[in-house]
Length: 65
Image (cartoon, rainbow, N blue to C red):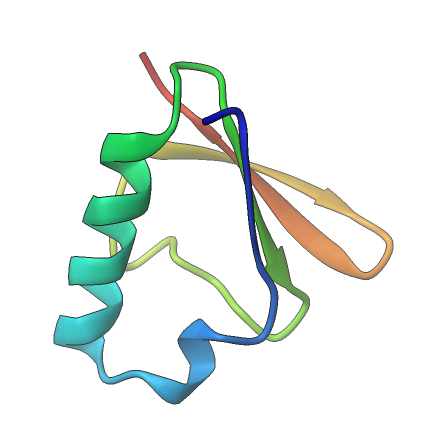
């Protein structure tokens, strides 16, 4: 998979569930694949497997290789 759009979903999960979901998304994304999140979401304290790119109304995380 090259893209995952998950805007305003993670905000409803507790920390453990967020980590589990992020691991699943990481595993299905191709290297260099993109994870799109909503502007209220951040994963910086949950995982270091993605590089952050900010833009207008959201965040884009790129899977690191």
